[in-house]
Image (cartoon, rainbow, N blue to C red; front, side, top):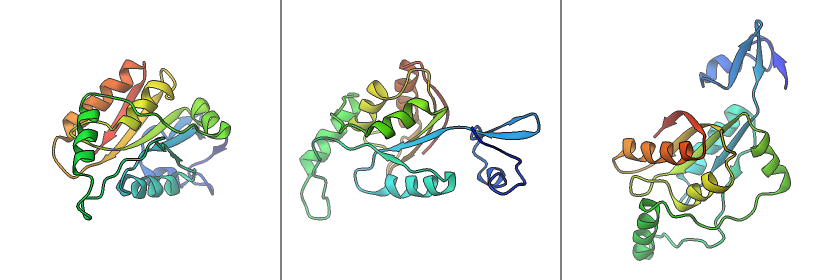
Length: 178
């Protein structure tokens, strides 16, 4: 772990970020926690937000990738059935098969004091890729800060579904922002 006083170079930005839990005061100094930023993005909205957070936290984000891609292209007039299937899968809490992380990425998640988890919201639920990550790759007892992107309503339902899945793994959600 590295230490820096909040007014010294490298430490002062913590106050500007105002993300409770990223830094904890310890004897007048601030201890930087190990953070893993993990996200899934189907159409790019969550990826854009994850990139901004990663830049602010000065870390590289880790992208969840499904083995089988989904065909969502509303603008081209294709994917309507695929969207309906994905929404049903999310609502049922199903999991998709994820591509493996590199050894370095897996170690970053295992060693993290905190996981910042980014997700789109489908049918007021988390998509199968996020469900698979929580069930199989999120370490039990992890502290999670979650953010999500959505175009509809029911943010409370989506946050509740995410909270329930993480708590079922013994994890703790400190904050959910949708």
